[in-house]
Length: 459
Image (cartoon, helix red, strand yellow):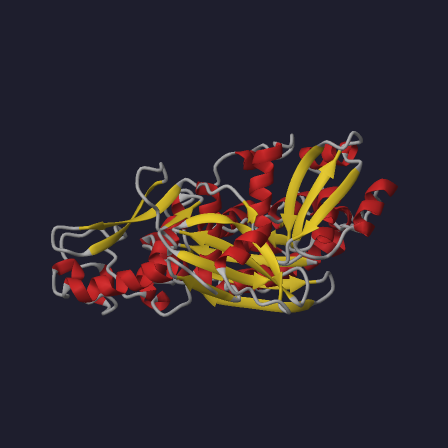
C-alpha cells in the first residue's frame, strides 16, 4: 500500500516551517482506494515568496483546520503504507516535525519519485515535477498546490511502476511486509502473543530481559520488531529466546508500567527510555497587573508543573490550543510579542487582557478553569478506565498530587472506601516521568471517569 503525498509549507527556517496545505492519495498499486486534501492553518507567518509561488495567503487559512484537527485522518490514510512523494525526504521531514510537536512519533518508509525517475528514466534534462511530468505527457493542473501536485505524482508513480521491469519498487514493499519469511522461533513467539494492550518482555536464553516495550496490540508490535531491518532489531532477533507479557487493559497503565520497569531492570536495548522522558513544562505566574499567565520553561524541578512535555515545539503547540480554547491572551502566555495588543485581540478571540481592558478576575477565572481540569497538583483523585476484561476496571490513585500506583477491580464488587482501594493498588514510584505520562495522557485522551476525592475520602 502506498500513500502518495504532497505538502505546501510556510517556508522559513529549517524545522520551523508549518504546513499550509496537504493532499494524500491512498494507492494499492492498481487504484486509488482513499483520498484526503485540506488547507491547514499553520499558526505562523507565511514567507512572501511562498505566497507568490502557491497563491496561499494567511487570509485563506484563517478558518482552515489546524494540524492537530486533521492529524488523526492523516494517520488513518497513511496506516501501513509507504509514503511516496516528489522529494520524499522533505515531505516526510515536514510531516514528522508536525507530529513531533503533538508528541506523536510518525515513522514511515518512503519512496522518492525524483530518485526513482532518475534511475528508471535516465538522462532527462530536468527532474523537477513540473518539467518532468510535462516531458512524459502527464497533465498537471494547479502547480504548487497540494492536490494538483499529488495527483501528478500519482500518475508519475504509476508510470514508474510500469517501467520498473526488475520490480525493485515492489520488492522493497514486500521487504517491509510482515508476511516475509521469518525464523521458526520468531514465528512461534508471534503466534503465542496476544492482540491486547500491555507490556511485553524479551528474554535471552538465560532468562535475562534484553528489551521491554508496550503496545496497544502486542502481536502486531512483535511482528514489527521481528521484520524490521534496522540494526537494533536485527540484534534482538538474534538474541531473543522467549517473550512474556502482561495485559494492562489500557495504554496509560502500559506506559506507566513500561517506564517503571525499564528503569528498574535497565534492559540493554532500552537505553533511550532509561533517561527522563520530558524537558519542558507549563507553569503559572501572576504579573504586576494581577493576570495569571501560563509559561513554558525548562523542566528542572525548581517550579511546580501544571503539565509537562517532551520538547519545546510540543509545549508551544499545546499552549496555542489551550490559549485558543479558553479565550486566553497570546501575549500574556508568551506566544505573541508586541508592544500593544496581541494577534488574537485583532480577531476578537482575546478580550483585551494584553492591554489591560479585561478585568483580571474574569480572565483569571478562565485560567483557573483550565488548571482545575488539567492539573492534579495537590489533588486526591481516581483515574478509572478499562480493565483487562469486560467486567473489570483499572484505577490509578493520586493522593495530594502524588501518584501512588495502579490496580484493577471487578465490577461485581463495589469498592466502598479508600483503605480497600489502597489494598488493591500496586505501589509505584512517583517521579517526574510518571507525572509526565499521566498529565500527557489525560491531555490527549479520554478515560472512563475521573473521581475527585476529599481529604478523608470514601468512594
